[in-house]
Length: 415
Image (tube, rainbow, N blue to C red; front, top):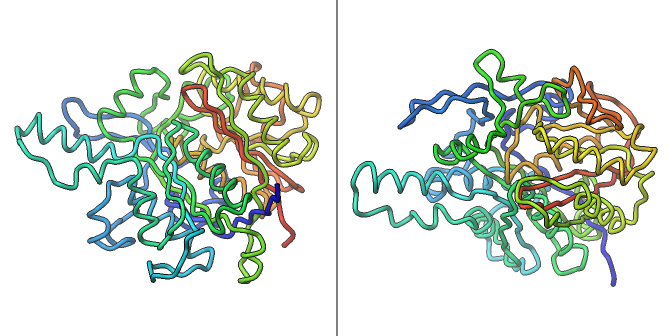
C-alpha cells in the first residue's frame, strides 16, 4: 500500500492559558499550573473542587453571537480551536463553495453537550416547563462540534466524531492520520473538546473517588502524577485542534510544517472498565512503533497519560518498561496534565500539541509538583524541570476507561 507522509500544518487551542501557542508552551515548560479552586452557587449543593477552566474565552467575540448561540460550550471551544488551527495552517476560512471533497474532520469528545442536556433537565424537573428549546437536540449531540466545523470550513469529506472516554481525541487524530496517509483525504481537521463542569457530571466523577482534593490555597498543586503523595486527577475544560495534511500538498502550497505524525496504535485491555492493564498498553505502544517504522531506541520523549490516580500511574510506567527495557531508565517522561488538568475528550489533543511543540522547539516540558516520586513509578527518567535536548521522535499516550488505549507517534522535521 502506498503510504503518504502526513504533515502537521496547523495547531490551535483554547486552553486555560489562552490561545497563544508560544505562551502555552512557555508556561508548560515553566511548570505553571492552571488548576484553580472551583466554588459555585449551584444547587442542590455547591460544587467545590480543583478545576481547570478557560475564563477568558468569550464565544460571542470569537465566533460571533449567531453562530455561538447554536452551540453548547463544548462545541464553541472546539470551533474556536478549529478556527485557530485553520488560520495557523494558512488556509482560508469560510464555506466558499470550493470543492473540498477530500478534506474532512475527525473530532473527539467524551461528553458532548452535557451542559445543554443538563439545562433541559433542570427546566423540566426544577422549573416545571413542559417544552424545551427546539435546539436542545442539536446543542447536545456528540457530533455537534465536527458538524459545525465541517459546515463553517466547507469540508466535504468525512465528518466523524469519536467518543472513547479519555482517549477520544487520540483516536480522532489517529483515524484522521490514517485517512491522509492512505490517500483517502488530503486535509483533515482533527482534535477534541469537552466541558465537564455540568453539575451531574462533576458529581459523577466525584463518586468514582478519583478526584484530587484541594482548596483555594492547595488547588494549583492538586494534580501530582507519579508522585508518592498523589491523590487523583483534576478535571478541566478546553479545546485543541490540529490540521493534518498530505505532505506533497502542504509543500506545494508553501505551508509551514510544525512536525510529522508517523504512527498510531490502539488496543483494548478487555479486562476491566476502570482498572488499566499494562499488557493492553504494551500492545498499543508496540503497534504504534511498528506502524511508524520506528524502534524503541528512536524515541526520545514520552508525553504520558499520567492522570495522578493511584492505579493508573504505576501501570503506565510498567508498560513503558516492558516496551523499552533497559533503555527506559534514560527515557524522558512527563505528564503535562499536572498543569493543564485532565480535559477528557480534549486531553489527547492538547497533549499532542505539547508533544509537537516539544519536537519543534527541542525542549521537553516537565511533570509539575513531582517532589517525591512514587517508588512504584520508578524506572524512567521523570522530567521535573524542562530540559533542552535533541528530540527525534516522541510518543503521546492516552489510556481510557473501558480499557481503550491509543498512542500517537510524532517526528521532528528540519527547520
